[in-house]
Image (tube, rainbow, N blue to C red; front, side, top):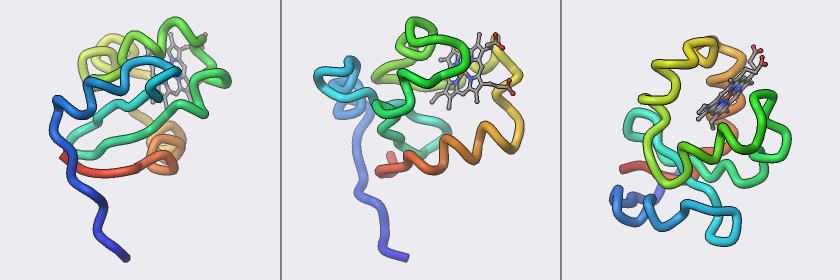
Length: 82
Ligand code: HEM
């Protein structure tokens, strides 16, 4: 498939609210999860804590995310790479 665009962590960090769209990283992948925020089973306030940055510190605490069905949801929102 076509290669994904490459972003810096600084560019990702600008997407830290619904107004600027909500981006997160996981590994070296970048995701625009704006459309998922409202339907997150853990609530909007929790998922927005990760807005503009890495999911890893949060998912270390909420390890139920490290299962295939969650990672599959995430993959659907991929927009780029670091
Ligand atoms: C639950 C997805 C980010 C906190 C869930 C579930 C999914 C999900 C699918 C249900 C899991 C299950 O029951 O099997 C995502 C995705 C995220 C994300 C795709 C990022 C793009 C976060 C963040 C936090 C968080 C950053 C915390 C700061 C929680 C909590 C639950 C949950 C507390 C449990 C809700 C409950 O069962 O009562 N998330 N999540 N999530 N998530 Fe997330």
